[in-house]
Length: 240
Image 1: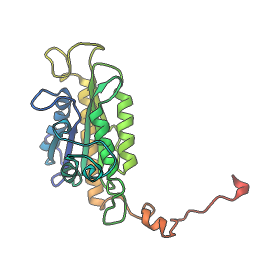
Image 2: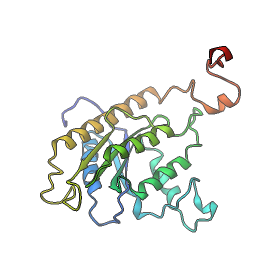
Image 3: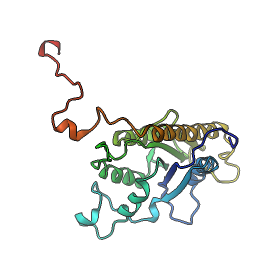
């Protein structure tokens, strides 16, 4: 992996850890995310980690909830760190078979930015790629992966093949990913998936960067509103 011929320098990635544990408490989700982060850094990608629970992210679907009654909202500052990243990886533990409440809050706040556009008039997430990491001791990893990756693509992120990775321990109160004897860091299936995810995120981000993003023809909302239909023709009533 360290001797590849690919040059990913110039790419950037943000890892948003949606653990419920505040720093400096150990996060098992971060332990798995760190494998992906380390691989990216060895390939020249600049990375940053945001532990969302350490910030005051007000619930809501507006870019700045202070304008809608919140006393404090750190999201506008975090958004300025997420926006420039070519790659976004969201990590979450499993609670009651689903993603954490912190993760739901982060996804909702990303949704709050979805009305913004880039210089080409596309939704602002176009040209970026997304992935998902999950850890836990109960069922739900695939469900969460579907949920998070669907949300990201709906906002405009490109989702590569094998864009999720997970580790599931024995059901119930047992060792977590980073606990001694858990087998988590040595699990070949998980290590394969997090490696595939990471390389595919880098490959897609590089391709989109070199392409100049997703071509703008056919996906600009303002053009549609102005009457441009990109070749769309209404179906005839008899054909319905």
